[in-house]
Image 1: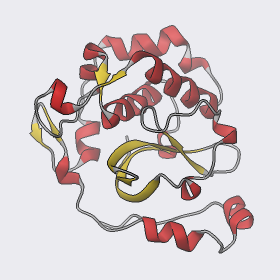
Image 2 (image 1 turned 180 degrees about the vertical axis):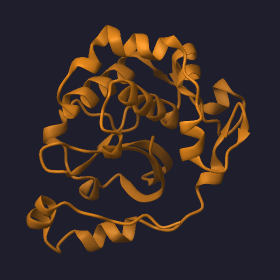
Image 3 (image 1 turned 120 degrees about the vertical axis):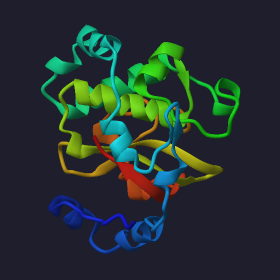
Image 4 (image 1 turned 180 degrees about the horizontal axis):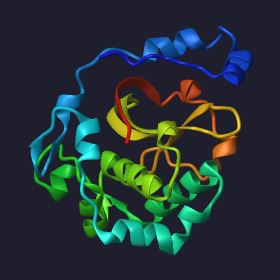
Length: 199
């Protein structure tokens, strides 16, 4: 499976041909969908798994309590969701929680445990964004090679210029608002994309 690169007009004007070839090297073909393991066993396609996920009232309750569904700006909404996940979920490896190397939790499992590893927090961000009424074409669960190994995080196309930025709740969390974040292609810690999934 290949992941096509597309760039907004503003990005093309801003970056020209100087950094796009470098990003193209980072995006590669990989059958990464088969690495997912959850309570239901191995899932063939992460998109299908995400769309088939069931949710408790807890997810909607968190969105309503924080009034994320009333914010008119997706940049602000996603930033507040990222910060909430960082403040309320504790990073804990799958080997400690599930006694296995890799296990992808549902959003409900992460909320119940209040712990999770990289993809668990990223999945929770995605689900909270969905229930907050964000435009889900702009946000994806992304996983791939980073400095130090494999990692999962959220990527998001910001409102102002369509530039894709990283929203990482655990490895390289930053308090910067979305407007001031670097373009994903210039983030040195993120080396290659193995897969993406959307709701």
